[in-house]
Structure formats: structure tokens, C-alpha cells
Image (cartoon, rainbow, N blue to C red; front, side, top):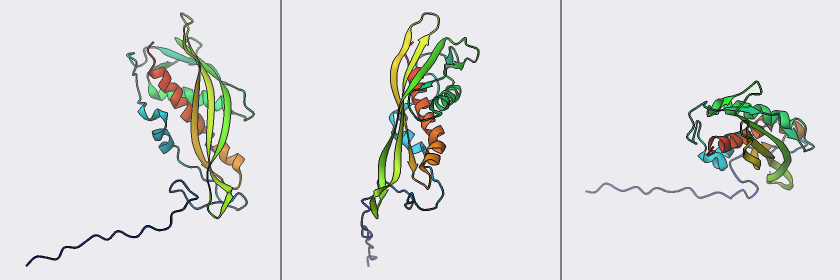
Length: 202
């Protein structure tokens, strides 16, 4: 006698929330009290143009064979502290990558600098019950990056446009939220600049 075969029943799909684009937390209106919540930047980096980036040399150089000097980035936007944040994160990222040795005494084989040219905020999701109230923003930070070989003056990167991104969730104070997200935003830009340097053919 054959044992009865059970059939898997799939639960009926519930109503789709057309006001969101992903599994985010419950909405927080800008006028309500609530903690500032920053969205993780890790998924953004994995799904972005840096997804193929890996640590270490990819251009045929031995690790640490050349040194890089980072000149402080200037800021042409109205947002404060961007230049310092990008300069700090780029130095940190280059040390972590280990393709180059970070020069600290103005004697690097390659001199890298740049100009912060744009800072933008884009609406991503809205509160389902109020389509005029933004729940999440995508922040972008753009810079024109220059890399020059000290010994020859050869330009390795000539005002190359690089843009970094991060996501923020609106809390009671969007200015504070953006300030807290700045290291993530500058860090994503720094990863992209480091990838360009590490994958260069020089």
C-alpha cells in the first residue's frame, strides 16, 4: 500500500508595499521622535562598480613596490568637511589595500589629489501612508581625481571623475544623519579611487 504523498502549500502572497524598494525598517517621519538609523553600506558597495575590486596588486606590481602621497582634497561644494573626510578615508584605504606604500613625508612615487565637485541627495523610498514624506535617501559624492608620477610628471589619472554612494534613513534630524553617514560615503569613494590606482597599467 503506497504511503500518501504530501503536497507543499505555498502561502498566499500578501499585498505588496508599493512605497518601499527593499526590506527596510518601519517608517520614521521627520517630525516624530526616534533614533537616527543609518543603513548598512556593505550591500551598496557589493552591488556597485567596486564589486570586482579585490585587495592587493592587480597591475603586476609587487605589494608596496611604489609609494603614494595623498595631497589633501579641496572642496568646491557647500557641504562642510568633505575634503578632510575623503583625504582621511583614502589614506586609510590605501594602507588596507597594500598595493602601495603610503608616503607620509612628501616623497611618494605617485602623488594623488583631487577636488570634491558634487554632493547630491536622491529620494529612494517614501512613507507608505504619506507619499510626500521621504523615508530613505541615497547620497552621492563626486570628485575629480589626479594621480601624477613624481619622477616623470606623467599623469596616471587626469581629473578622472569618481563617485561614491551610501544610503541614509531620515530621522528627526537629517543634518545629523548625513554627518554620521559621511565616513561611509567618503569610504566608498576612497575604495573606488584605490581600485583605479591598484588596477592601473603603470
